[in-house]
Image 1 (cartoon, rainbow, N blue to C red):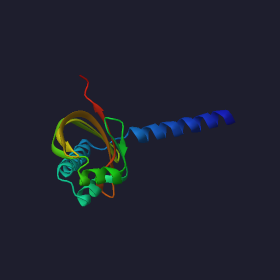
Image 2 (image 1 turned 60 degrees about the horizontal axis):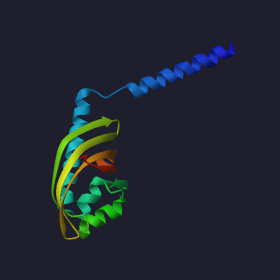
Image 3 (image 1 turned 90 degrees about the vertical axis):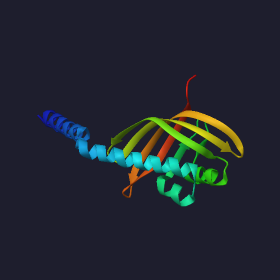
Image 4 (image 1 turned 90 degrees about the horizontal axis):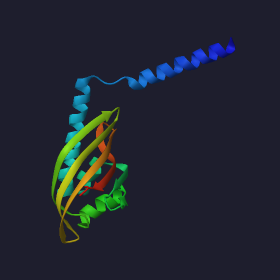
Length: 153
């Protein structure tokens, strides 16, 4: 009898947990969240072209993990510092094929980034695929993690 009660309780807890996880926000709320994330991503695109410490700091999380296609990983400070110093210099950035999936207070953003660069005064071009993880912090969407990969030839 005790085993049956334990099993029934465990089953009820599992069902309650799964039901809670499976519940989703109404479509209008999800669409609104996706629009808010898209607006934040656009602000970041613009801020990367014309960087200021204030604009960038408002868009990226303190715990930022910013992965480059070459394998280097920046923190919030090194990401902002490299943009301000011109070590990482975006002349233009075009975003295409963007998708956004909001799950709770987190959003998964994928897109292709095509840019003209002038890193440390050396002109270049880049086309990479980006995975960005955005998190709602204090009512604002902030980039928490980003990973870039080179486009397959």
